[in-house]
Amino acid sequence: MTASVRWQVADLLSLFEKPFNDLLFEAHQVHRAHHDPNAVQVSTLLSIKTGACPEDCSYCSQSARYDTGLERERLLPLDEVEQAALKAQKAGASRFCMGAAWRNPTDRQLEKVIEMVRVVKDIGMEACLTLGMLTPEQARRLKEAGLDYYNHNIDTSPEFYNQVITTRTIEDRLNTLEHVRNAGINVCSGGILGMGESREDRASFLATLANLPTPPESVPLNMLVRIPGTPMANLPAFDPIEFIRTVAVARISMPKSHVRLSAGREGMDEATQAWCFFAGANSIFYGDKLLTTNNTETHADNALFAKLGIYPLIPEGCQTPTQSPTKQKASLADAD
Ligand code: SAM
Ligand code: DTB
Ligand code: SF4
Image 1 (cartoon, protein in one colour):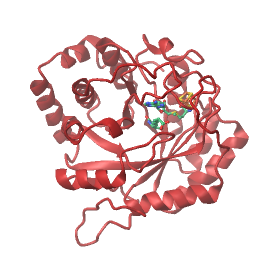
Image 2 (image 1 turned 135 degrees about the horizontal axis):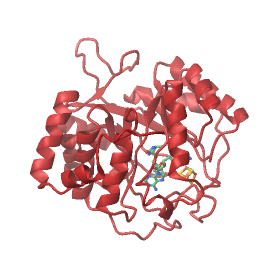
Image 3 (image 1 turned 135 degrees about the vertical axis):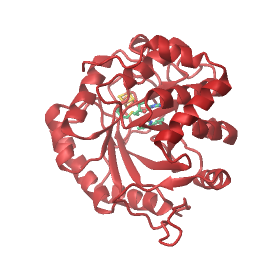
Image 4 (image 1 turned 90 degrees about the horizontal axis):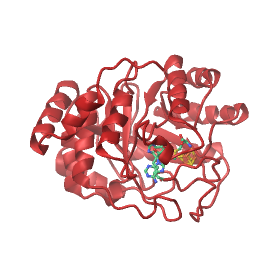
């Protein structure tokens, strides 16, 4: 994908180097100018095919190369997917994201996943998939089926990439993003912080996303979940202040995107998350589980949203039973 250079890495690096208060003030101003500062988009994840992945992503519990003790699971049956989506919707999520541990789907696998997309759309939720690499034709099939978002992370900077993954290149990832964009599906692409990358890598990672012909509509920022058995199991914990700074730089460089505070919230205290929302994060994964690891418990998220006066964003065309016609604003609720 030919990228126009909207942001130089050096520009983003100098944002990172600003005093914290100056950076946060600037990011929050950009945030207010483009978004409702108190609305947060809420997505729920489901792993539809777990483990035994041929790729060697050094952070991942699902790579067949590492002994992480994860039990592999075949593609889930359609009714299980529907039940999980209904539960997520009842709890207040507007988007249902289904992830598969594949390098890429075969056309037969894709047809099965398309049935899942239809089920999610039929209940009135946005549908998102993350299945690995796609061909242009597969992206077109997904668009036809009504898919709203496709997640495919670049994960880190082009310079650091081959220290994390060797079985594919960042160009492979950018090609899939181009196929998704050309098919007219919203792009969701971000990465992981705390994998031993430098601050310059973080600036280069964000510049790569911000310089795409159209920046991703959704940018998930994951704090590394250190999985026992992976090569990244023993890395030091990532500094929460640097995480907040990264959210702020993402907000400034991609003003219109939804920046998602993604994996790693379980280990984050409320104050860190509140700062992330102030810095420009306006999306979360909600539900007790991410793909294979635990997420913050829903009752803790409900309490945090209430404490901060944050409400879930309900996109047009989405239905949620918690949306009261009189109050206008929705809220989160335990689904059990
Ligand atoms: N196999 C597909 C792929 O790699 O595109 C989809 C699933 S994959 C698990 C989706 C994303 O989850 C990865 O690109 C990575 O950014 C994130 N992820 C996976 N394991 C993680 C971990 N331990 N900590 C933080 N993020 C993680
Ligand atoms: C993304 O950026 N983070 C999500 C989603 N996209 C697919 C996945 C996080 C996975 C965290 C580790 C796990 O649960 O296996
Ligand atoms: Fe496979 Fe995706 Fe995990 Fe990489 S991140 S090992 S591609 S499931």
